[in-house]
Length: 496
Ligand SMILES: Cc1cc2nc3c(=O)[nH]c(=O)nc-3n(C[C@H](O)[C@H](O)[C@H](O)COP(=O)(O)OP(=O)(O)OC[C@H]3O[C@@H](n4cnc5c(N)ncnc54)[C@H](O)[C@@H]3O)c2cc1C
Image (cartoon, rainbow, N blue to C red; front, side, top):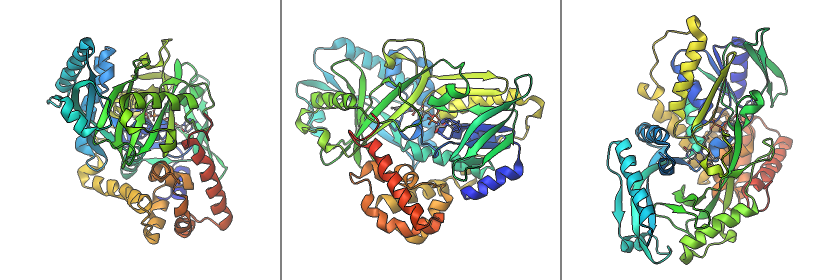
C-alpha cells in the first residue's frame, strides 16, 4: 500500500481495537503481535518509521554482558534468548558478531568478573560461545592495538541494521492486515467523562489535515517522548553518540568490547556495513526532542580518548570520521549519579486504557511486545478477538520476500546502482516521504559516505520525482532539507 492508500483505509475503517503511537521498534513489535492476534490495529508515527532511537542504536542484538555485572540477570537472560531467536528468524538482517575483550595485565579481579559473566552468558544461550585468545593472535587480528596486553576473551553477540529491522517488522504487521502511517502526529488522546480512552486525534504532517479515529486502547510506544502523553512515567532522557569511521583507516575483523580508561565505562568498536562503528557515550539529555540530536565536541573527545588509548597504532582522529549519529533513550529515573547505572529494562504503565512503555532494548522488542499485549488483552476483555494467533508472514513463505524488498534499497541506492523503474516502485511502496527517509534510513548512504551521497542526487532525481509525484520545486526543497538534516550527522555542524 502507498501512504495515500493507508490514509484512505484509516478514514474508511474509522475505529480500531488498538492504536499504537510511535513507529520505533517497540511500536512495530506491538503492531505485529496485535495483527497476529487478529486485532484491528493502527500505528501512527510522527516522523519516519524508526526516526527516533530505533535508527540510532549501537546496532547490537545482544544480551548485554555489562548488565550481568550490574546484577540485572533477568534482563540479560531474556536478551540473550531473543538474540538467539532473531538470529534464526532474520538470516539476511541479523548476523552473528564475534567480540574480543582485550585483557590488561595485572587486573585479576576484572578478569575473573569477565570469566563469570561469559560463563553465565553461555549458559543463558544454551551453548558455549566464549573462549580465550592469546596475545599473539590478538595482535594478528588488530595490529594497531596497544601493547602489553595479556590476550583476550572472545564471545559472540549479533548485529543488525536497526532501521531496517524496524521497517521489516512493520511490513510483516502490514502483511497481516495492520495499518501503519508515518508523518502522522498524535496531538490528543480523547477520553470520556470517567477518563477512559475513546480515541485519538492525529495530524497528517504531509496533507496538513487533522483526523480522528475511535479506539478504547492506546499503546504509547513513544520512547523518549513518553512523558508528553503520560506525565506520570518517571523518565530520564539519556543521549548516546557513535562515530562511523572508514575501515581503510581502522579495520576491525570483528568487534572489540572496551573499557574507557578514564571512567571505567564500557564502549565498543565494531565492523558495520563496511565501516567501523565506535560508541557509545551515555549522558543526560536536556535538549529539545523536536530537533535531531547530534554529537557534542565533548563526546567526540571522549570517544577519541578511548580509541587512542586502545588503538594507538591506528592514529585516527576526528578528520577521519565519515559521519556520526546520536540517539536519546528514555529510562526509568531512579536518581543514580552515573547515567550508565540506570536500568535498561522497560517500564510499563496503564491508566484508563492508555498503556505507556519506555526503556527496553532493540534486542528485546518482541519480548516486551508480548508483555504489552498481555495488558491489551485484559483491557479488551470480552471484546477481545479470540481468533487463534495467525502465523507470521515468514511461516507462510513471504518473510524472505520482505527482507529482499528492504535489501534492494541498499543494493540500489547504497551501491549507486540506480535502476530507475525499480527505484520508482520501491520508494512508493517503501513509505518514503522525504529524501532523507531514503538516504538515512531505507538506505544508509548518508551515514556511510563522507559526501552523504550528494553526487547521487542527479541520478535519483527523475525516479524519485516520478515515484513520489514531486515537481521541480518540491525536489529542490527536499535536497535543501536533506543537506540541512545531514549536518546533524557530521562533527561540529549539528545541534550538539
Ligand atoms: C545510543 C543508544 C544505543 C543503543 N544501542 C542499543 C543496542 O546496540 N542494542 C539494543 O538492543 N538496544 C540499544 N539501544 C536501545 C534501543 O535503541 C531502544 O531501546 C529502542 O530503539 C527504543 O525503541 P522505541 O520504539 O521504544 O523508541 P523510538 O525508536 O524512539 O520510537 C518512538 C517513536 O515515537 C514517535 N513519537 C513520539 N511522539 C509521538 C506522537 N505524539 N505521535 C506519533 N509518534 C510519536 C517518535 O517520533 C519515535 O519515532 C540503544 C539506545 C541508545 C540511545
